[in-house]
Amino acid sequence: MARMADLPRNGSLTFQTSQDHSKSTTSKNGFHRSCQENGISNGVHHRSRVTEGFEQPPMYVAVFTYLGFGIVTLFGYLRDFMRAVGLEKCHVAQEREEQKDFVPLYQDFENFYTRNLYMRVRDNWNRPICSLPGPEFDLMERVTDDYNWTFRLTGKTIHGVINMGSYNYLGFAENNADFLKTVAETTMDYGLGVCSTRQEMGNMDIHQELEELVAMFLGTESAVSFGMGFATNSMNIPALVSKGCLILSDELNHTSLILGSRLSGATIRVFKHNNMQSLEKMLKEAVTNGQSRTHRPWKKILIVVEGVYSMEGSIVRLAEIVALKKKYKAYLYLDEAHSIGAVGPTGRGVTEHFGVDPSDVDVMMGTFTKSFGAAGGYIAGKKELVDYLRTYSHSAVYASAMSPPVARQIIRAMKCIMGQDGTTVGIERLRQLGENTRYFRRRLQEMGFIIYGSRDSPVVPLLVYMPGKVGAFSRAMLERKIGVVVVGFPATPITEARARFCVSSSHTREMLDKVLHALDELGDYLGIKFSRRRYIDELDS
Amino acid sequence: MDVKNLKDYLHWLYYQYLLITSIYVLEPWEQTLFNTVLFTMVAMVIYTSYVFVPIHVRLALKFFSGLCGGQQESTVALIS
View 1 (cartoon, chains in turn blue, purple):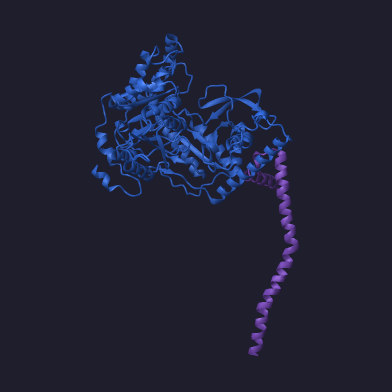
View 2 (tube, chains in turn purple, green):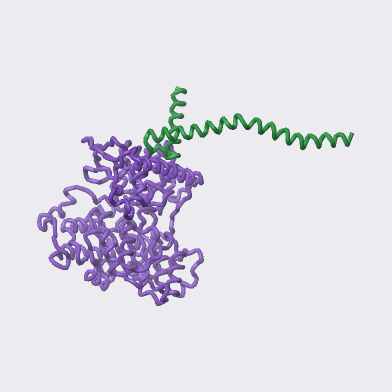
């Protein structure tokens, strides 16, 4: 730990730790060999530069965003007033007459927001899809006669809409019969439902096979799988920490992590997004002061971070966090929901991206819902940890076991990525994803959009800022047959509404070019090219 | 052609106005209400400035010319 003495004050720790670990990367599970099959050696420190940016918009953008929210809020009050005096019919739930002296149920800000702001642009969300959500999908056309209070399906279908929103990073959401042969066979053999938990009649050979494969894929000792990704987080954190423990959580963590942390009963402290000074300050404070009031030492300190943040597209500064965790003897919980399969030269997630030894991360959590095109989640780590969770996690004890075809789909996808299926499809998809990501990000930056996140993250948030433009943007994109996800206030800070693209390896260059062309046009027409940076081509360097 | 371009441009300007003020998301009658209120306010500002600004300017000019001009005259008188 002597090398930690010279930590630079700016919070960016050096990556020395990765050097000596790279030599000792475990080959116990054949992790090494499988990587070499794909032609890329593991353990080499991949990319130490953290190329991330959160560019600030010009001042007037913030002013107009607040102004816009102000105007819409004023009209919201006007409409609420009209509803209250009976000038207008109220379509949503409201206080009942006989309960008018009770605690109000529908008068908080969230209800106001849903009723008066969200309702006006509601047509941009929950659009019904009626085909495979691959790189292209079909939408059911839907119209409204009363300004989004109710929708009516016209019966028509909009064909061939480019899908820029699914987390289908490696294109495994597919219906190619040749690829899905093993899944079909499993369905024939096992059926679809399990109808029991892992501890009772739901523990199958296919689950064992899956867990062994996951452990091998990640280079950990052991792994356990769960039927639902969200529950993997929200039900396992309470099993790991309890009252008297401290959770240090990144401010942009996903709701599942937040819910799990709250359910655990542990004290939660939030550090600034990816900010190592903030984290170190809190760790230092926690170690020196202990619990509040009693000043007993914390039983456990758990740092909870995500690999790739889903709304910002930023990649966690893992090497620095591992260094801090070792220095202060804390535990690390890494949620790789978006990064597993999508980041790293062979798809092993952020540990591979930074060349960090997976055994340095205490709890490696991830989901199968995204890159693997299936459902469920896993937790990997030391054997003791995994065995403990098998026994004590609610998700393992009470939740129904994973459906066998789903498990088979994950095995298929994972073997494909590892190159164990005897083809190079997996590694080609990974390469294609990296290429698509960098191309898409580079072109957007050239066009002058403000985008967030790391250069290698396939989640690309494009900042739109103003509430009016969010609605207009999504509608205009759909007119051009491109389906995008726009995200507003409850999920993002109020001034930072954005459109979020998820690049997939199954997007062809033509599709991306079509999207980029439409974005270029719309960027000028709607006026959302806010960037003041002159783009310097980093790819040449 | 020019007329068409100008028309397009004006359309675009109005669209930008809708987007930037976020009244794009409002229902048409609300947009009309907002535009009416804004138009009335702007019209009132313009009218009051048309009526009162010349008076204020004249008064100000008189005041400053009284200050500066008077002094100048006296200095001139002194020198001569």
